[in-house]
Length: 112
Image 1 (tube, rainbow, N blue to C red):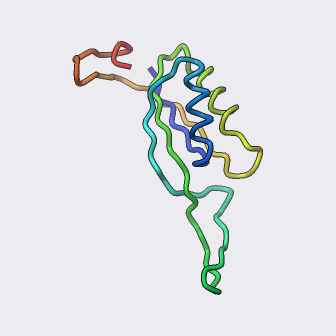
Image 2: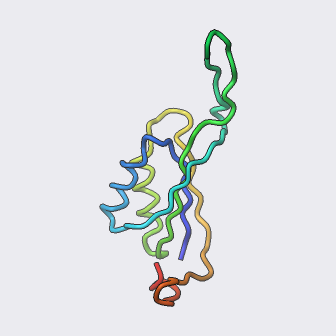
């Protein structure tokens, strides 16, 4: 089992969700986060004063999947989230040692 963590632009959420649904991935956790990388923020004007926005709004998606569909899930996320501009995001893949469905007590891949 693997945990795919994707940081994407907020307006790409529906596209990514639809792409994942098309390959039979129906569950994810979404968190609103702020961060920066190479994009390094930007300056904005508010009531005549200029200020720096260091941290940009992003969404963090966490998707637990069977190891057999990791590559297709990554490809679906890339295709749906990519704009070709700086700040499109990142994808991280980590191992899941154990998963348990609280309601039924199912463990392992059955819990996903």
